[in-house]
Amino acid sequence: MKNFIILNLFFLLIFNSAYSETRFDKDLKKLSKLNSFVDNQGDHYQLNPNINKERTIILIYTHGSTGKDRKVDTCKNLWFQIPPVIYQLDGSKIKDFTIKTYQLCSGARGWTQKEEDLFWDTYDANNQDVGSVLNLKDKNGVLLINKWGGPMKRKVMKLKIDEFKEKGFNNIVLSGHSAGGWESLILKSTLPSEIDGVVALHPARSGKFAKAKKPHSGWVNWRDYKISLIKVDKLENVLIYSHDKDKYENPRTSKFLSDSENVTFIDVSDTKCKSKITTGGWHGITLTKCFAEKDLRGKEIIKYLNEIF
Image (cartoon, rainbow, N blue to C red; front, side, top):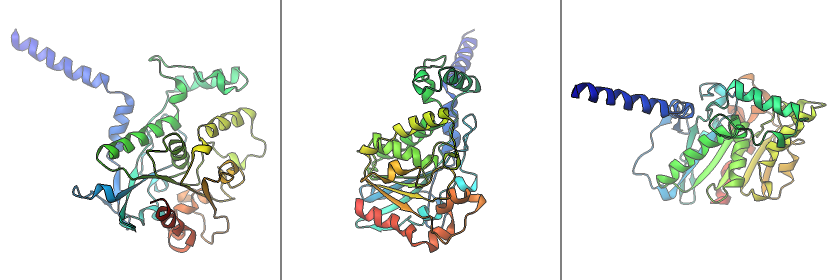
């Protein structure tokens, strides 16, 4: 009888542990296996545990998004992987500092189909007023506005920043493409003392907005909300790349960023490099080997890092 009780308690503990593990926890475990430091040849490696943490700059790269919030976005797709213009900096010296580049897989799943339907049905029923959906909650009391792809990506990024900080790495720079760049800007503007800078490659978070001739008012309102999350007046030490043929965001639609005195904005519309479908067309021109090797504006990143450290 005693053994039977002990066995039941054992299985109960296992069940409770598995039940308490959220979908986010499971996604994080899956994604963490794909995270890695990447050397200047693009190869993954383990960091030396005896490294001088005070003299190390961790350059965290975060990929873009497919826009499918119910699916895990991994780093397996080519245009989700850390690009040459970033990983070529691994091992570079900045005064007394050494750069270490890190690929972060950040695409944890967001809301369920039912939650997403509730969100947008409510939005449409209230004339696409963002304020009408800000207080919607799931069955556990979590705000739905915090469960779409953007906040979930930021959550993964913040956890990784905290992890590095806890290990003694206090020199953190974020880099990212598309949604990864956009969320990096939000984090920098809301946590300025925790993040030293941001290198944003074609930051975007509103679909093919730059391509739209007459965007729907509901689309504009939702985009305006996303823009409001970036506290532009709080930004500093930010470097942004943009291209006028980018169908997601271009220098014209990104004027709210380029007009800021705290932002170094680089327009690469006249680059001689050719766009590639595998890296997102013109939206990912800075992800190509050509840009890293042949366009001198790719070298602005190392100059920028020299200025902020």
